[in-house]
Image (cartoon, rainbow, N blue to C red; front, top):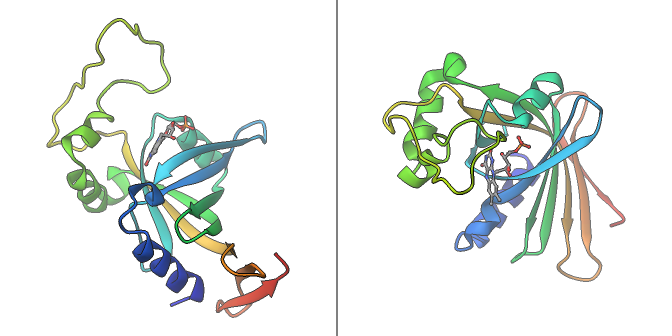
Length: 185
Ligand SMILES: Cc1cc2nc3c(=O)[nH]c(=O)nc-3n(C[C@H](O)[C@H](O)[C@H](O)COP(=O)(O)O)c2cc1C
């Protein structure tokens, strides 16, 4: 288990009672080469060290990731005062790629969570005087529901606890082993 992952497991454990510690920022690159950043929810981590996020193929990030799989995650744990910056490769998993995996994430959602995927096309005009109605069957995985599989390639870890602060760069060496270097914060 790489050291960064042991640290992340500890951070998640220490912040298990604060739901906002499951939110992180995901930055993609758009067609003009400009960064686009948004908040998403951490849904798990795979054996292959990929962060899992649920999303919608009708959003801009889908187009951006389809063009450029290189992304960055920035995750700050306020309680433990730690920042993780993950350089990652994003893969979009829809029902076509892995129906069981996608369905298992859909089934874990509450009805309120499922509703957000059934309101209609994201980022299109709406009449704010009319209610937004969810249309569809909660038992069926919508075709646009997807999983973002963010395989971690490098980690820049910063801990603000203590004096001096700790900053570590985690990368894979030529043989594929994770190595860590301490650097000046
Ligand atoms: C606290 C919070 C959590 C969010 N979680 C997700 C998420 O897990 N997946 C997602 O696609 N969007 C999530 N969003 C919405 C995104 O931030 C964003 O507004 C939306 O996905 C459209 O992004 P895009 O147009 O850049 O693709 C969340 C927003 C907030 C404020």
